Image (cartoon, rainbow, N blue to C red; front, side, top):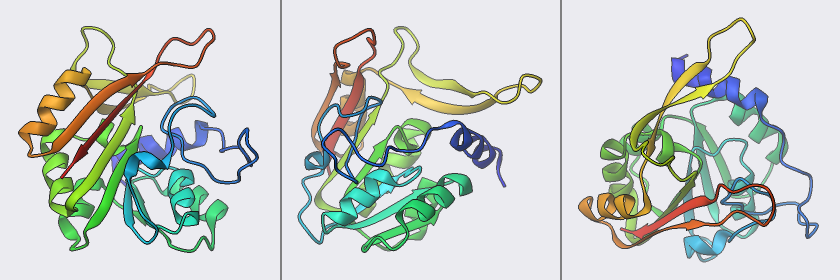
Length: 222
């Protein structure tokens, strides 16, 4: 097991499970942000029933499972065995849902499949070098296919490759993974440079209350 996989297995054990139902009483739903019942949904992917979507860093599978219930062919990949075990336990038998343990760039390079949409919710697009990931994503997106991803906006002055720390026990040093933080206009420029079109990057404000950190949402077409 790689150090990265160990780090995300550790993270998985610290994350709460997705609620049984959301505020509307739905058992599945799509959530781009770090806040419950906030922001847009699966419509950002512009998918039709039967469309094929790839979740780059699916975690415990909630977003991919929701797409499957809408009639999509949803594929989720994650490097963490613990995340995938939780996803398989909760969403066992969901029609149209496939889950694979894989690193994003390797999966795309080894696959001959193409997809109508790919997405990342605080996932691989945040934690993989875009110079390596964006070209492989574009190669596996069908013409006009959409790439959408979300993550926290960057801390002012801290741009590019940054260290992200995953805590362990009180006597253990935290685990470290790399993440890539850019301002919206920089993400737009990076995507255009890699051949994407219809590029848009915006920060969705946090819901009213004490929390002030919004969500960066980026979309583009192949």
